[in-house]
Length: 167
Image 1 (cartoon, one colour):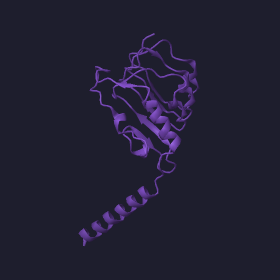
Image 2: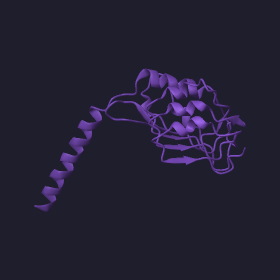
Image 3: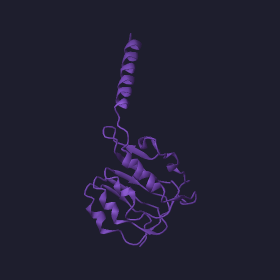
């Protein structure tokens, strides 16, 4: 009898998960486009970090596919909005200009760009556009100069990692 009860509960859980996935929204097209444009800014450099083995997470990013299924991208299941982007150890080499499409992802809550090589570029004041951001990790990413004061506008920020950041 216990086995039957357990099987019933397991079956119900499977139905619930299937139902939840069927109602999950897909990534809005403008957010997919923003991510693909951001990807184009960089070349892949497997030696971009001595702290981790670089793996190009952006290789799974393809036009015409749901960005919520892309590696490193997490979406809100109800809205489809991109809420987390983890590109740590992705071998990104290049710089992040202030007008990059990355800053169009206004629903971001977590952003991890650690262990990449941003080629001694400045930390853009555009990061201040992420008003919902709670976690920002730019550690070991080869940024240079001072931290823009606009970062102080991120009132929801609870974690900021700028380890090995030099001025």
